[in-house]
Amino acid sequence: MFFIPGILITIATFPGVIVHEIAHLLFCRIFRVAVFEVCYFRFGNPSGYVVHERPRNPIHHIMIGIGPFILNSVVGAVIAAPGVIPVIKFEAGSGLDYFLVWLGVSIAMHAFPSTGDAKSIWQATWSGEAPILAKLVTVPIVALIYVGAVGSFVWLDLIYGVGISMLLPVLLVRALA
Amino acid sequence: MKQCPKCDYPNLDAYSSCYKCQTPLDAQSGAVATASSPPAQAADACSKCGAHAEEGYAAPLCAHCRTSLSKWDIPKWVLASSFFVFLVVCYAISHFPATLNADIAYERGGRAEAAGDYARAVSEYRKVIDRFPDCTEVIARLGISYYHSGDIGHAIECLGRLDGREMSDDLMRELDSVVDEIDKKMGNARPAGGGN
Image (cartoon, rainbow over all chains, first blue to last red; front, top):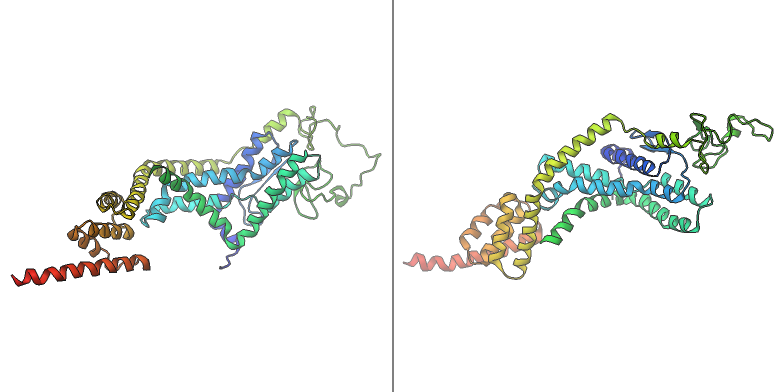
């Protein structure tokens, strides 16, 4: 296992950061939560952020937090799908195929919510008067986010990105072959 | 915005403690909140327009301002980039059925080969070759299937295209075995042919 500074990975996969922040924005719009500041990408930590008000409903807060997991996974899978088969299966990809795979994997590997998102979700549910169900739902979600954060040291985010990118073609082939 | 002295999180002016880490914000700025301190604005007034603020939210905003702030504009460069990616993906997806069919044919070819139906395997692998004519793995599988189906001529033609190519050890061993068998057959056939 080799170490590459996080900032280099972030720069190489910057489209994923942008889609990650758009996902937060999208769910803020869906749940009518005021947004005060957005940074789509910057050279720093965090590499992007959305400052929004604390939602009234803790479930909305959870959904805003895990929004990137949904949007980045779906968008990454769709974008990478046409390029994955030539590049990975038949080693015969064109420049366009490689571009799509890079873009799809970059987007999908930023699907994991950040630890900042996890803290925000945790505080919104456990420090407020959230229903017990919301509090219970938060525990595995936050645990998974931290597992993802720790797992990124062993390239879990990249493995997830590649896995998600291959998912659609693999499922289609299994269903149709 | 009030920046948190502990975590630098940018907080709304209306917040008295950090949204992220709960650190008191007023103490840092020197403004000590006392019971007699007059509020800067009515508690139920929108901090943006002064209208009646919606109840139940930490940020004092009216319904109109909240809706308007939730519809944050996405910058034009992001929209333009997304549109470009959308066009590229549409173009790629227009070619996707042919690629997908090739992959399906490859799967079917593998199954037919495993089941000993080499004629079917050849037919499926030929479909893959039409889409990916230079893929080492497919050429090798087609050559092997040709050999097992009894078409030695085409098998030799396929295997000849693999000279100097890199491949997995397993595939290399399988090919070596097929080449040896072809050599034996050709060797056996040659003296008979050459003797005449």
